[in-house]
Image (cartoon, rainbow, N blue to C red):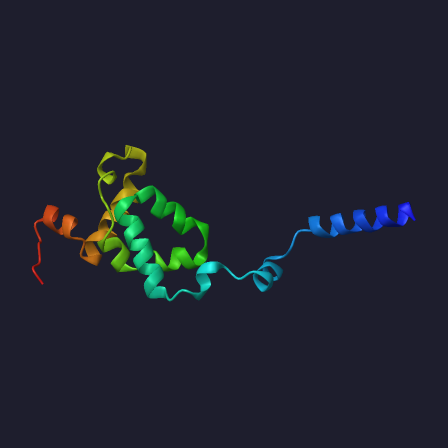
Length: 120
């Protein structure tokens, strides 16, 4: 009797330790943000980008949905540019890319620095 209970317990533990595939995980628990509209997710990322660049870029790395929504011009228009100017020389190309994306999206601080302020 005791050995059968032990074997059931051991079998249940090994079943719990088995790794799920990505598809199985999605079927069991869809991501919490999957039910949010893209407009709301864009607004959340824009507010995050306006307060912390590091948190914004880390959030973009966490999943495909945030990476896709985080590329919206609205997010770059609201991004805080405070620390971009102080990044080391080896990362200048990345900074220029971010700066140019902000410029194309109509970021007010970038337009002011470039001398192309539009009052629309």
